Length: 564
Image 1 (cartoon, rainbow, N blue to C red):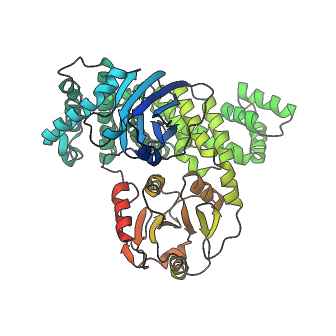
Image 2: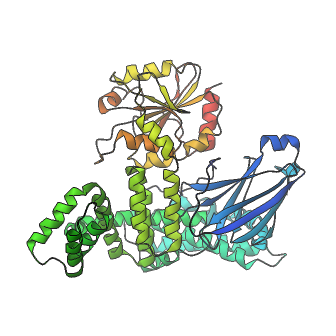
Image 3: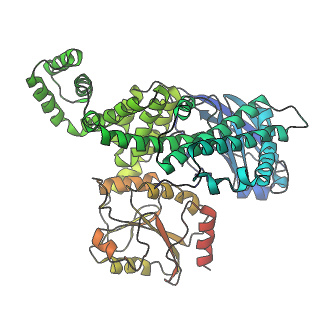
């Protein structure tokens, strides 16, 4: 079921996550100073974190830290892929702001003794300075205008989803005009920055596009030409958090259309042109003889001349099945994208193919598929965005290898890596869970019921590192990975352990088979993916249907209160 709630982009920042480097990128130099920085404030927060988006992963922000000097100055270089990108500043969870970055230098100053009190805290100089200084004024004016309009503001989404297609478009346009008009309202006493206007127009236009794609998914219809034409702007600046949300919604809509295409025309969607198959085998199969290569070149140029050539290709495929299956499956999907959309949308969906399926592949497979997809992608920003997230996926390869190789797993949890505990048992689910919970008496336990193949589970678990950063040490996360009979998935324990490390799911991990899970049906009701529970330090449940990690503030408060 498609959600009808607006997606709120994850703004929690994962400290310590560094941006990978690229062969070709532009850099934004960020420098500045915290005036009146006290020793106490410096000890509490000795660095500032700057984050930016990746168009392929709405739940991820890529961060880099700028260490503070004793005099309050800081400087950091942030690689960016688009000519303009939204950047997010977080000073130790005490002060936040959004600004627009471009290749060049931006200077930021604010007063340490004004945090939490000043109406305007941050001051900008350098690149995009006028837009960045006026942006908070725009936000205040927008909030006021949206609050004053029930129809287009506070109650807009209560009725939007049940509107007809034409009424939905009319309402979305009206909301966009109201939000964009906030620029003029905010700058009545000054000259509005053209850069601010274009920035806000991109945000408001792309919110319209996001909610219209959501409306199409909710009501199960195909979008019209105007929405399809809008996809040409996917690679244009500025890259904003709103752009990433809209791109994600389009991707979800495209998935729905691809599945329909597969159902309607299975013969085309399950096949590939012979010439393409010959090229894929030639370029990726191992231990090919010179004669094999020559034969494949002939097929690539001329197609099949006789039936024996198909047997020849099948024999080479069988010898390299694992690698070639990866590439053939990608090319089949890519072929459908080309049937459905224009070049920009197709290019986006090509790189998104790996981004949405990373959890299915080992990191060597991720690297192989990434290299192949990048070789077929013509838009630099998309190609580099894919490279960026794959680099992040494989950067923990040493820890992944250690966790995958760990064998000393017992019924009681054993630490396999710092912060990561594994447990396994053939006992019934109830007795196994009792053993683990008995060892956690005196601690508050957050039980996470999930499955790696379940999209909702993956979305929720992406918020866990941010949630854990807000909690005291006496809160323990207990992950119950439940069996998934409904999924056609041949995942392995190695892939599960890779996912755990990559997504920093620190805590205790239990992988339950179907009978063990069923034994807990009444005790852990609801026993379904992406559901959560809280156990008090005395071992009794505080909530069997607890708030989700996405509701970070609410969930953190519930866990803290349960421990009192």
